[in-house]
Image (cartoon, rainbow, N blue to C red; front, side, top):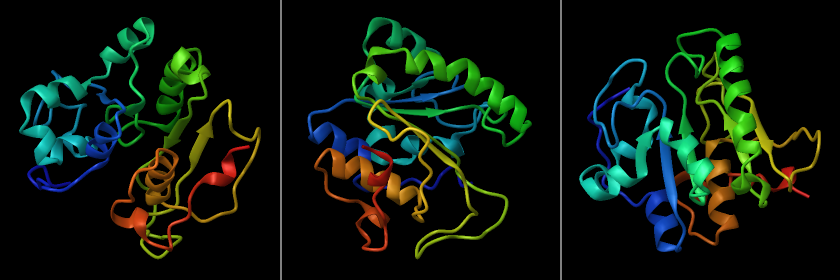
Length: 201
């Protein structure tokens, strides 16, 4: 949970922009765009984008792309949702510090607006995943931190499908990169990383 472990490396945002697409990270509870530090229930450790030097130290880029979650409703209403969206709930709604029921209630209020948006209806996909389980168990070569659920919701997805393939967060990264013809970063480039293709028709 280091808050000063800055990273000087190519990241998914760099790839998305180089590929001519747009992105934005919506952080619930973030006091202002590109905020660095903690302001509970917003915690910087759950905002991966702020750790990349080429995002955090570029004020214009950072402020345009790493924003408070409240901006999502405006972007949905205006039809200005970017191609790639990252959403982080606050420490209560992400179920870290509050109950599962609290997180479920938050999702029940937020997900319908996303599913009713043009961005989603136009062959979009919503991935809902967690960052860690209740043990340190891992399924695959580079996985640790427990086993988690991941929901894949899309007009292109197989209805009611449950995968038996062992996958990691790098599988999600690889799936995004492969679908947009981007090179694979980090663990996504490992031959041990499965692509999440089986969820789609």
